[in-house]
Length: 447
Ligand SMILES: Cc1ncc(COP(=O)(O)O)c(C=O)c1O
Image 1 (cartoon, rainbow, N blue to C red):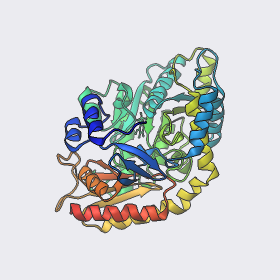
Image 2 (cartoon, rainbow, N blue to C red):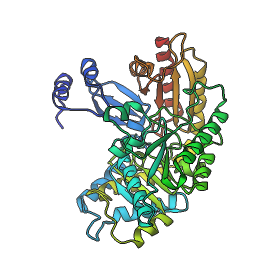
Image 3 (cartoon, rainbow, N blue to C red):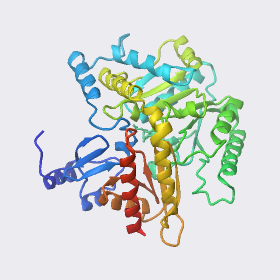
Image 4 (cartoon, helix red, strand yellow):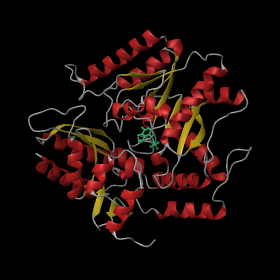
């Protein structure tokens, strides 16, 4: 591709390109940050700056950039058969092999997969499957969906309705009827005297009260990210997730684990559901399934749910690109890398704990209110001098810190008054040191 001069590209971007989740006036004033290439854990921007990617693209480039194995698998697949659908009683080889592979990796009851192109579509698909599942059994009154404050489940009308972030649903007059929020276990943001574990218990008790109020026989499912990511890296307090899971068992409510961020090694296992023994009825995934090399999402369902769908004939759902062979080929090559290079034990036993130690050492910094995380995911709550983080800040400290961090050579994500970290899983100790040294410099400057 011919490289255009930066200024010319920025002008074209400003004139023609609408970005996702962006304040366009601010971006145009600052100048769009254009990334040109990448290798390993670093991206090179249009102006030649080499930056450590502390958020793996957008929580997705798990095996890092420049993996020729994925590029070659995709090229081979494209040469042989770039596309064929999985409608018309047909399909292709890669999605079959991928579905079988996922069934081996996922919690025991999840053996059936339908594919999508994104996490939003995976959750939207889960919602429709759940509706169908109950309607086919004559229980259409069981339609309400529970999700948690600070949840992020996507951007379609229904998945936005499950997203517990007012900035996402407010502008669109959502949630839709039947979508209810229960408290997410965000202890730091809760202004409570309870300790984190007690606060987690309170969240479960409050969820039980909401179930009681609504009537369990009207509630179809509860969606939960094991670690809430885009809502601010909310790590569940001990005991919270198993108790929430048990509550769903007790009330015959399907439990859906949204593993779009937590899947494929970020916490040192294939899925967080395995770590916390959540035994979900449905599980959704995207991002790390291909390490972001091509778009792909997936919805896995338990044998019980699949049986109801299969027994009842025509499954009237799916996308042109469900089971896209080239995306599935990318996923298979990505899983080979994750497995073949021992990346899961690397995250679980070595680099994850190393990353967490460095992260938590920054808790001592005067500009840090809390450092939290698990595996290769982390957050720093940033304090304005003499204050506590605001839940809806006018001048978010997280964005300010992310701008300073980029000047120090690392990309992190600002959310409200915090920054989120989720580097590629192949990150080395030296690179983790660089990440946190740069962040410390940025924090010093912020303070
Ligand atoms: C937990 C979770 N679910 C769903 C989504 C939506 O995925 P997508 O942006 O691929 O639609 C995201 C995206 O960040 C996510 O973090």
